[in-house]
Image (cartoon, rainbow, N blue to C red; front, side, top):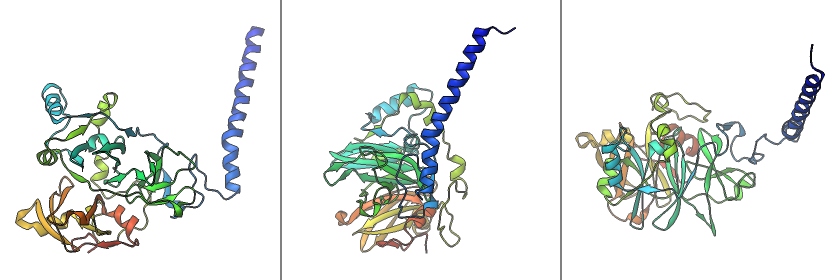
Length: 355
């Protein structure tokens, strides 16, 4: 026999749960269908109604800020790296680890990729300059942007959206839906309110190299510190199998023509406002017996490039007129082609993957 009090209590619990479900449907689901009827693109946060790129190539990969973006994070010195490597069971950094190197106004800082792949964006100040250090594992793309846009200082975040497999960044000081959405690879606003009127983000000089190389060139460097709670994650590489194949996880259009590997690694230099892409495998072929170091002429500017095709790193040094070299970026071939094949101010280099 059931106790009447229990029956009554259960009925009210069920009724309350049902009412709550209806409220959730009304608040969350109905606006989505309303937006569809009005012709707006469904988005949980960002304004995607008038993108400058094909809407079907903008896809959701994760929730907004699912990755912990870092803001002026703690740093450590090389001696702390050595002490940790001696005393702890795991290695914090080893000589062949890839790092993003930034050197501004005499200050050098290294951002290990084993940390960056779990954050993708670091809003930092180096040499008195506000910069955003960004990395996309899907495109193996490294770009450092100035965060100073007009009178504002941006704080870039991970929107969770991709365009051509490349992350779309947003300004966390504005937040959705008012923030533009910029591509991580070239800093163009492609969505958000009136994207055609939004400023581009300005890429800066950077270096993707090994920890051994960076420390040799900049012994005074400091290093992005690990978040203690994430140490176990930093030891994992969820992109290992992805890097080892030509398979892509998200839609990309167009794909590059020819027989070159989609994930051929490029270093892209901007000289006098013109972007020129250089293939690491072709740099190696040109270097011949001097494998690891070569010299190229880009629009009359001689550049020394120290590279390692196996590790996918390349350090670019102008041999004269350094002011002509405005930025250095890195990316997989498929990503650079998809984003820039029809852009003005971009030409294939003598040793480009396009040749």
